[in-house]
Image (cartoon, rainbow, N blue to C red; front, side, top):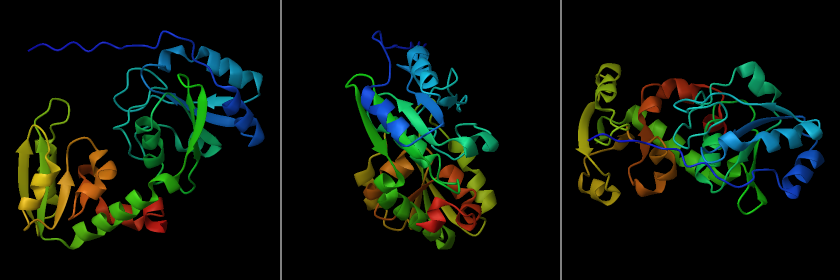
Length: 251
């Protein structure tokens, strides 16, 4: 079956509310990394003008799997997903997200987990015309449990690998690299269209789970996994992640 995906851009005006501008000025932020969800990303001219009028520089990048520069996908939440050069990321005072909801800006928190210093996420909702902040404290509990799952994975011998057959998320072949990377572990593959978290408890011989579906499952749904869960990319480089000076090692 052929599938056609169409963007649904917001038809109204997109600009920073007074609260957001006042906050940026109060914090004396000089450089912001600007990102938006797909509904607003092509309508940010007014935002850039507002920032320029307040002597605030704008940096952005073309993130993984996005169509245009400045677009943010909630599922791309790894430290290199934004594809921002490290020298540029060091000059950023904060991340400025334009959009509604918490799913997308949370990705900006997760995406920083390997940086030495976490930067504040300032969220401007163009629909409600309100500002909100998002920091590591908002996901600290999740990150702490994720670190525990990484440590558990290193010593576990029996691993459950969750695979979906949904187009765009199916990662069965990449998951087979786990067997080459960890020859001393036994991997069991659980393949389905929809992941039923409550059914995973039936397989009590599994010591820890590896998620190959949307990477946000490994973070946002930590509480649903009694045995712990980590994402495929992190499973393939667990020792490296725990050995780096990162938020996960400094919590």
